[in-house]
Image (cartoon, rainbow over all chains, first blue to last red; front, side, top):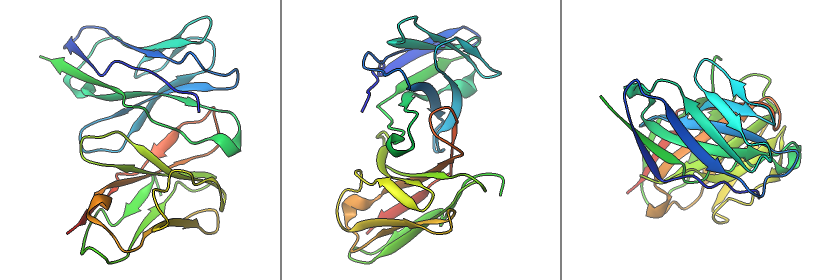
Length: 112
Length: 114
């Protein structure tokens, strides 16, 4: 299974940008890069995903390295509600291998 | 329904009893996943369904754990002869396809074995 590596924790002040890194050096050509976050006492929620090109949505931006061995989730202006554990996950294209494996994630603390 | 629904939301059971946890995925979603999350820990993959079949059940921790899915919809996770170490939040997720689609999670079932 392709694995991801993330820092255990990060801190930010409210209204500042946050860059959450993820290394996935064993990524294969058909793996999508997904990000989920888990707020306290809730199930995980989808944030964003991409394959090769950078992606933007209303929640965040995803910057993918040219060699696809790393990616960065960008929260443009952190709010207190963004305090959560952020997971970077690789999702393979094939049905029979779609385990959706979560690593330990990055716990983001946001200070007022 | 609008999202993934899990029931019950909380379950307290005595050690040695069997429990069944239910997951209603989003209508039309072919992929369904079960996870376990112990207090303060990450998500542990248990089993993955595509339709009614389970291409990957490698995460089931012991033969006391089993899961089935019927009609390509509802799934039941059964834990036989529960032990205290089975206490955790059990999460279910569903997805409309592989790789390029997002997965939607339920709120989980908190299982406490006393």
